[in-house]
Length: 245
Image 1: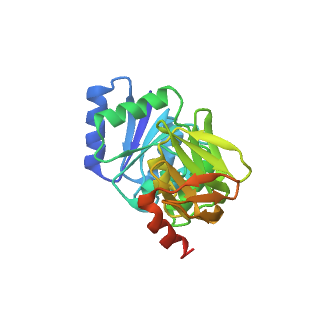
Image 2: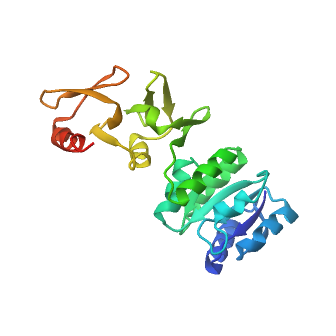
Image 3: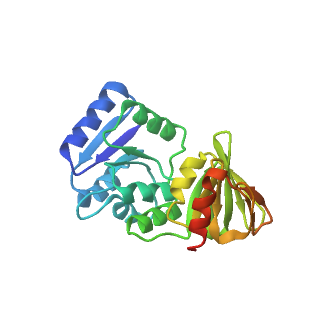
């Protein structure tokens, strides 16, 4: 497995090289690069199997660099220190990343995904990530399922329900998909849209609420006909938020 490391911080490159050399001898480091503007030529020259790519770099950030390629013939492991929009961008597009400082366990998981060919990037994912990173909220998000990725409009999602560590997504046309993510992950992903957690196991799109039926907690009738219970402890927050929509 041949790779190139691209990061504008020398100590980050050194740390990653040490982690790889000590723990992952099957990974051969072809080159490391501090200057993102040189990275394109290095990748074209060496044709690596995959690259470690920092997102926040001067001149060309990681997404800008990738957009220069007509075809992504290599896999990508994004690396980033915590930055809300960098992390948001890769979550909206269902891309994998390593948060600095990189741990041995997270690195092992990333390398395993590359070995099993589960880390490829589509042009659509890259476009979505770039848009979010540039502070543009997309209408479409990428959602990982057991069969791969499903791209769906956020406006078409009616509600999300937790099911044993997975999340069932119900759409306006009454179709459903099962996501390989927890409801907490989905809640975080949709936090900037008009979604609200009416129950510990239920997240709804407020734009699809058709009726509220009074009760101890009450229930909401959604646009696709679903009737969903509101937790008593969330009733007032729901009513307060809903009156502002």
